Image 1 (cartoon, protein in one colour):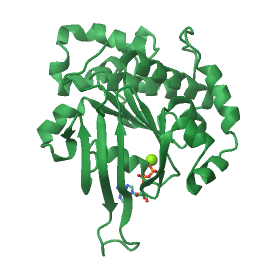
Image 2 (cartoon, rainbow, N blue to C red):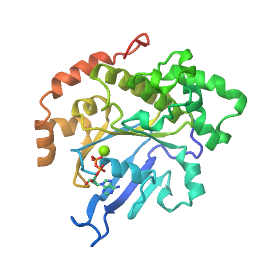
Image 3 (cartoon, helix red, strand yellow):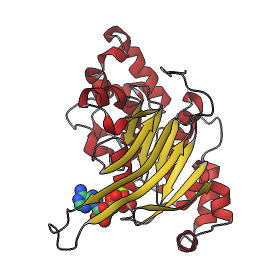
Image 4 (spheres, rainbow, N blue to C red):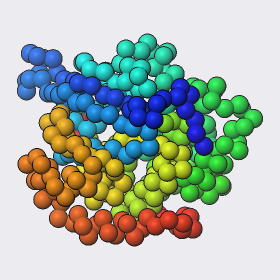
Length: 291
Ligand SMILES: Nc1ncnc2c1ncn2[C@@H]1O[C@H](COP(=O)(O)OP(=O)(O)O)[C@@H](O)[C@H]1O
Ligand SMILES: [Mg+2]
């Protein structure tokens, strides 16, 4: 299934971020002075790519993700999506573009209303973007989305509190896909889950990426996971990308001292990545027994 509206030359980036800045706490207002959360970040993301952003807590990863979608307004810079600078759009123009770029958060519970059924939660984006899908076609599409995230059909009638953390995160993914986005920004999408469940959610994400040709910005502090899923890695420290490159190159031959210390502080790296690789092989039967 391909759902590009405006066609791009194959080599043009889908997303091009230039010189993005975000400072919190205007000068004089904060005891600790202003915090430069994002201090001049530039990168490009091509269609079908998975780019990881790694770095310690507080390095600015979430703020960067949020400024891309204007959940937080950047101070300066540009975020070109297919050549259109999202940062200059009006509210209504931004709302229209938002369907192309969806975000998945660490804690799906916060974004899933407890009183609503899974079917209703997945349908919610169509209330804001009714043009995406005729009302009559929605039940079948909900069934398809549940299948795509490996959840059984009867889950449509359940509420979030009847689901495990991994199942909730898969509902959040199904809901993000309802608008047929091209880019998913995943901010620590499995960090809150048990390791065994992480592998299942990651498998769903990797399969979806391949089948739907999605592009991912995958934020994680789990280097083993990043090595498994990402084509490119950006290492973020104090609001800046200190090193970027193809995943294997960055892992095998880190250039920056900060990258080396990050790798060194992750002793379980090789062990973990081989475990996760075993949990993610090709065509397995869906498993629903996680808790
Ligand atoms: N809304 C906010 N107000 C003030 N400071 C913030 C806000 N959000 C983030 N920060 C600060 O910006 C820095 C980067 O935070 P964050 O983007 O959450 O990093 P990460 O996701 O890498 O852990 C931190 O110093 C954090 O305290
Ligand atoms: Mg964060």
